[in-house]
Image (cartoon, rainbow, N blue to C red):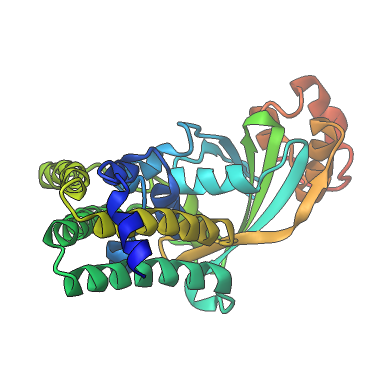
Length: 322
């Protein structure tokens, strides 16, 4: 034990706090796939925590074209978190079918994801308790500053992620959307119209107020200040904070990777069936035309040429052409 303490005292870990400033998106990605932020987030101290409010940028500004195959309307999906999920589950040259349900009907939580995330929170609490018992006040202060920064960002996210405009309610009506993503990834979204609207209509996060912008800026400064305080902590405290940041990053990465569903505004989006490969986009269009007995939305989406429309309409004899 004495030799271990001597080894620790000879180590130079003054810059361990800089790991918190790493440009990792684990925290932001977790926020996007959960659709909001929770109080438990305050205790998850991981690298990149100051980038949480950039969660809406993870979809890289893509607003894919979308067709309501039951009505013929064409629009764009502007919910950044939904687009990110579609990008993650979509595969080039394949049609991936998703289903949307009310969250209360989802009874199968991702156990690995939940365990990993709770473990990350418990790790922070354990490290903070250890530092308190050793009275390493610089290290304790840095952890507390990290938590206050997370509290500020969590509050801003929860306020900005409140449900907004979904359009007129259409209770009992079913919808089927076709989303065309970049790199020829095609996604079909099925479910009750009200549920589908909730995850595709409007933006995910509303614009921040002046107070929220100020709070998020203060949170970023707190993270930088906490990283500076780590340099004044004891070597043992610096080592614990290093272990905390590395361990939380690993656990958070596992939690994100094992989350198979997207939570969004009281709804759940999940994969309904494995991706189906198509050799040509036209082949997919022909199949959908035959199923939904309409061509207008597929012409508007550029999936079929106007000159092909009349020929394809012959595939559903006796149907009314909209």
